[in-house]
Amino acid sequence: HLNDKMVLDFGCGLGRLAFAFANTFNSRVTCVDQSVHHLSIAQAEWARRKTSGTVEFVVSGPDLLSSMTLKQFDFVHSVIVLQHMVPALQTVYLEQMCDLLAPGGKGWIQIPHKTEDPGCDLDESVRNGGMQMHSTPIYAIKNLFRRRGCRARVEDVGNAFVGGTGVSLASAIVTITKLQSVPSTRGRGRHLS
Image (cartoon, rainbow, N blue to C red):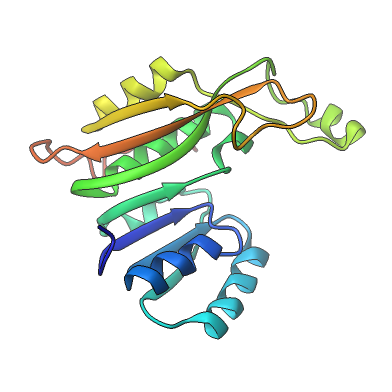
């Protein structure tokens, strides 16, 4: 299904999955990450591993994914990324990922949907050497995609992807499909300021 398709790998890190999409399916992949350091390592690694396809590297910034509003992707992928963002930012990125899908395009997104963590306490994280984990409830995820013209199937996978000792977080895999007959929401997406 991904042969010669446009793929967005959101939160690509060092690019391992992006390389697999490009090399296996001859896809045109856009790797997005907030870490310039990770993207520079990924770029160097892609130069060594490239066999087919193309990979573009993009730093996400305060404008989120707005730099890509002229692109449409056939497939959007994001795993083990969104739990590090506060719910409001998770929501904006999910909306923008849906908006970037071409009609009939698909997505496979992992997102935490419940946690006992009441919010972000940076001081506590620094003191304990931990990482804040955040979630968005399943009902909100479903409503968000419906409003943006995507059909969403949400599967609760428990603590897969985010498990570990002392982690009280449940994860969902959201499979989305952009509907064919929905008016475009491009340029009307939410942005954080």
